[in-house]
Length: 348
Image (cartoon, rainbow, N blue to C red; front, side):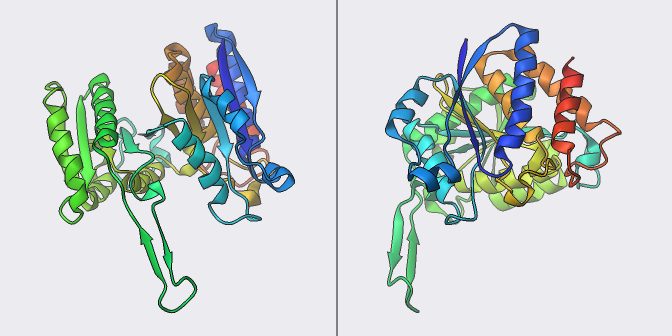
């Protein structure tokens, strides 16, 4: 009996997550696991009505869950990024979700904007440190609102924070057929990135079976566009990883097809599609739910339900190669449910 937390969130979040839950229910019937869902109303409407973001009592309850599913957060009635920082950011920090993991898998060659992409060759994982770097929130403003305004943001890396992400990345690389790990940084111009280089070299000695490479981020961006199949597992800093992950989602067909996990191995972790709340699409039934469905797939994999996760991965591939789907980013009404039905059909 898995204890799952559900944050539908804002905009299209509840709609896409509904399809993810339908797939989860079907998977539980077929693969013999059970679960109980705890609903949390965190999001714009709840905040505007109550002034609450993440109450301490709910946070303590979440600590005892097995996993947390999130639809999407964000609302134009509030300051840009406010809900993401105050809800997701707090969950990341309080639950110590120090790893962000994003698979980049091309399920259908028709979805990729690259001219010569091979659907079987683009299958990589990007890992980034999740709570440090410039995202630690250190800094501020001086003389704000004047012509002499100064904005300061400090990037923070710790040996412990860097090493635990690198060790996890080596384990992921070891578990994959190619056994290859690439460190991406900008150590030539950012002296603090030397900590990543040095720690990477030290940890690599404990993993002689894993092949390694280190490249700078500008080279990595070029190679992701030109030869994405060269990569197996990428590990990098918080900010650089955010950028590389956005590029990766486009290679696989767009943000509607991508999911991510914020992990603390062995503890409650968080799974979500990477797209935003897209308030203009809310209620139209036109949002692509594949990202939410793949978030469920990643959650099942992390929980150890390997057969169910593998079945769902195959079902998504079957769906995205279905000739009835003309575009990976549909704008017609009703396609949210249509995608969900096709994935369910593929599972069955």
